Structure formats: C-alpha cells, structure tokens
Image (tube, rainbow, N blue to C red; front, side, top):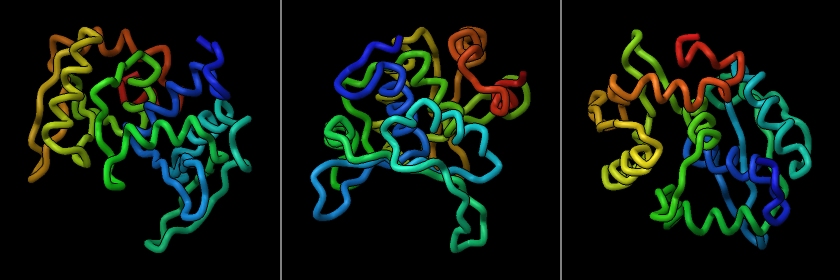
Length: 193
C-alpha cells in the first residue's frame, strides 16, 4: 500500500484524493509553478488533522496550526509544499478553479474513508450521506457510478435545495466493511461505532 509514486506513496496519494473529494483545496499561488494542498478543519477535528499531517508530514511546510477565522471559529490547518504531483491532480480535479470529478477517478477504501471523514454524515442508524452539494448534478451522478464500482449502491437525495449522495440501506454493511477499519477513532461516530 505504501509504494512510492513519484514523491508520493500510494497511501499519501489516496489520502490526498479523498481530501480533494472532501474538504481539501488544491491551489496554485500566483507566480508559482506547482500546486499546494490546504487541509483546514474545525479545531474540534484536531485528531483528524493531526492524522492527515502524520501521513503527509514529509511533503508539508510546517505542522498544523490553530487560527481564528473571520467568523470567530477556531480552525486547525496545514499546507503541503508545492509539488508537481499536486499540480497534475489540480489539472484533473479543477476546471475554471471549480472542483470537478474526473472521468478516470478510481475509488479505493482509503479514498472513500477519507472522503467520508471529511464530508460524510449519519442521521439515525440507516441514513449515511456524502455531502456533495458543491458538485454539479452530473458530477454527483458520476460519483454514484464510481461508488457502484466498489459494490455500493447510492442515489441522489435532496437536502433542502441542494442534492447530496445517500447510501442505500442494502449497501450499508458493505460500506461499513470497506471503510470501518480505516476510520480513525475520533471519527468513528460518523459510522455509528
């Protein structure tokens, strides 16, 4: 699992892709050649940010830091170094500075678990969602097809005025089996453990 691909291990690449699908942002700083990844969560998710940092430590600028947002929230974040591998991911995951789902995306259990820890939620015992409201409906349908490649059934679910992905109850045991061992302790509540 940790085979090196360029300067990234396979684990690092999977964590980065899961993060891009979720709350992470790739960007190219004006005047710079390569992209950086920003990982920024609420301070309540400190353990999760620290876990990502430990995996990505060799490609980061400095450890995570607390910061107060303009809204008064306390955030916890870090950035990676500029890397050509991140620039390649930027080219396929962003069109006109907006996140898109690439046609050639292949999900694995690590990508899915990171994506779920970033953007997943649970309501009751049988409603598990990926909060994909930031994506177009076409991209969300594409994501549903990618989930089907993992043997998971999902559909679009309207949340107020936006759409998101909901896993069908017949797929929940397979969903939990796929990601359960990869969900870190502080995020286990998201899958009911």
